[in-house]
Amino acid sequence: QVRLVESGGGLVQAGNSLRLSCVLSGGFFARYAMGWFRQAPGKEREFVAGMLWSGGRVNYADSVKGRVTISRDNAKNSVYLQMNSLKPEDTAVYYCAADEFGMETMRAADVDSWGLGTQVTVSS
Image (tube, rainbow, N blue to C red; front, top):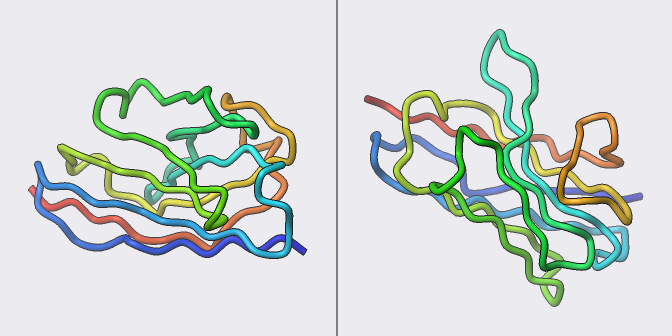
C-alpha cells in the first residue's frame, strides 16, 4: 500500500519561502504522477502543482504560477514544492498526491493516494 509523508510546512511571514517535501513508500515511485493540493479552512481542496509520471511536464495553478516549482527525485522517492514570495492567501494544509501513470494535470478525483498534509501559515 502506497504511503505519502509530507514535511516542511510551518509559519512564515509574507514574502518568504518554504520547501515542502513528500516521500512515497510502498510503491514504485517512478510510475506515479506526483502533485500537491491545498485546502484552506472552509474551502474545497484545490490543485497547486503536478508533474507527469515520467517527468518533464509540469502544471501549475494560475494562483501560484511563477512563485512555486515542483520537482522530483526518483532516487529518493521524493517530490518537492518550492514556494517563494508567499502570500497570506497561500495559508492552507498542503497535501501530497500520487496518481499511477497519471498526468501533470491532476484532478483530485484521479488521485490514488494522499498524504496526511502539512500546515503552511503565512502571516502578513
